[in-house]
Image (cartoon, rainbow, N blue to C red):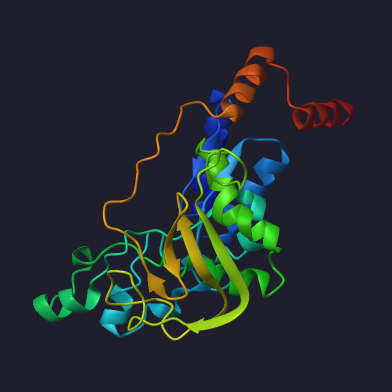
Length: 273
């Protein structure tokens, strides 16, 4: 179903001559549809969530609290249907984390004693753990190179959302938002030690190799070897200019109204047959 829905959206965008960004790609059939469209030259971006790459539907067990802490849209898939593909195909788009970091499953369950899913946040959080988990299961497992890791965690998003090179690059004129990465350091993820405003961690007990030692935001240290120095209210809204460069490319292509080379070849084969 997800693959069919993705294909419909892509073909509508094709008729309109516009790019398309597909959120929360969770199933292999949707990954395959996006990959096929990109191979045809379509401007399709697919965003996959870290949880869908690591977790499968086995988390939805008889333990109500544990199941409620894994409520997602789309839901976690079976291992066979899950979107493991984007890790091996990093150009598909960004790897996101989903959520605002304010998951309070246990407190809601204890307070209400309810079993209504609409009482629970529909996300799994994980912004604090995204980089380490993806490095561990991507780079350390040979599924990503370090450069591809940077692409799916930073550069892709900056370019798609028209913030590049202010963000997503280390160069003169860019924001000094950088991290220092230790690929050999390890840590064990736990709700007892994380800094997110959450009372549940979907990666609880996972030991990962690859850790941020220092984080700089606009050149100021926000994190240094476990010492959180972030200042409340110091964040800034980044205005995104409209019409990234790929919109201009689409405008030129639409103006020319020439068939895509793949379509031209398909028509030639059809006529020959």
